[in-house]
Amino acid sequence: MSTFKAPKGTYDLTPPDSAKYLAVREALSAPLKNSGYGYIETPGFEDVALFSRGVGESTDIVSKEMYTLTTKGGSELALRPEGTASVLRAALEANLHKLGNLPVKLWYSGSYYRYERPQKGRYRHFSQVGAEAIGAEDPALDAELIILADQAYRTLGLQNFRILLNSLGDKECRPVYRDALQEFLRELDLDDDTRRRIDLNPLRVLDDKRTEVQKQLVGAPVLRDYLCDACKAYHEEVRDLLTAAGVVYEDDEKLVRGLDYYTRTTFEFVHDGLGSQSAVGGGGRYDGLSEMIGGPALPSVGWALGVDRTVLALEAEGIVLELPSSTSVFAVPLGEEARRVLFAKVTELRRAGVAADFAFGGRGLKGAMKSANRSGARFTVVAGERDLAEGVVQLKDMESGEQQAVALDVLVAEVQQKLA
Ligand code: ATP
Ligand code: MG
Image (cartoon, rainbow, N blue to C red; front, side, top):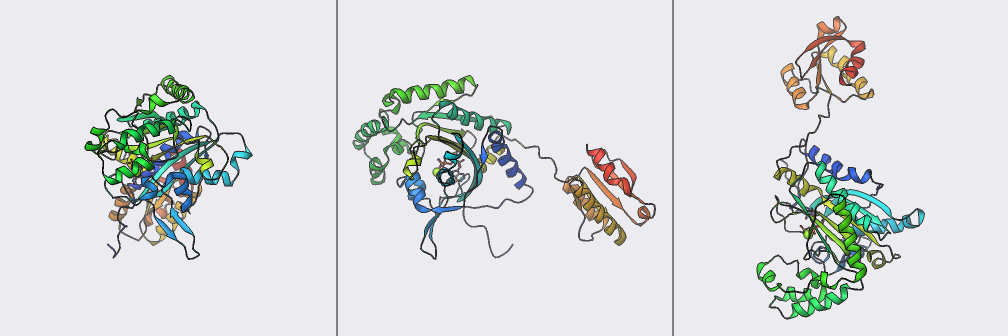
């Protein structure tokens, strides 16, 4: 151990576990790559105002959880707490919405930072795979994203997750509801913090997890009763498309999500094996966000799936991903001459596209064979002085245990043929 440790609320990914994270990222993004989404990458930090304006001053993310810093040049920056505002900013900056047909469909994968109280499933540095479809108001797009996330979780083998679905209305009907809700909430017995929230972001009070608050919320006006006809029809269409696709969801009129920019469709994927950090992913429509950050009207929809919690969900269901070994051949030289010859063979194998590794460090046969086993390689190649004198190496199939002498100059071809 060194003097240093990973900062509080963070953890390192190290082999062999790190392979699982790579596989999860791959599985979460695979359906997107297959559905017309292009890859986008944005900086790890942004102008702090992008988030305060986009995500909203009154949200937990901006008011409590953001890592902000002032640069030597005096710029106010924030480590990105989420992906949507950055992706939209970048899409606008690159004029993606003018260059091609709408919607612009993008996917991303990366690190996010929130100053949270660390606990299982809640970290200060975590990783998300996300998708955004920018510039189209079409219920099929909302449905597409939910279907693709569902597909991603299912290809990983997850079963014990549920999809919660709601509509938050639009700029016509939401304000009317907001007024009615504020009126109701002002009559309740709430602490000062929550009272302030009534003015800033009353919908979030519905999300309060405390039972003493939830008890008082019985009889609160529900958004569904306030949705305008356009929002109602839109939501019905999303629901019908999901049903037609065989995707099961639950209507959850309390689902408001923690970000200000959501309109109409909102959804969350919750996993039942994760305790209180149950959300593995979430998203929704954000028709007003582009204008909030100074862009044109671009109705959009997106989601972000948490990689860390998806890995925890796999563990909760006892799912062990089948991760093929990354090494096919492991070379074990016995002696100085063999070391040179086999090192050259390993290079040759690699150049031929065969994943190969080598017993470095000049250990004895026993230690080297241990490394070979640990590598998970299908074949080992062992050679000593006597083999080299005969121009052969010993090729061992680690699965069957069979061993045969193979002429040095046909080794690469022989291995390729056996692996094919
Ligand atoms: P929560 O309700 O758990 O705080 P959230 O609404 O803040 O979640 P989003 O902003 O929607 O989460 O982020 C999408 C996903 O990213 C979440 O569903 C979760 O899987 C993951 N996520 C969010 N915050 C964290 C965190 N601090 N640590 C690990 N994963 C996180
Ligand atoms: Mg949160």
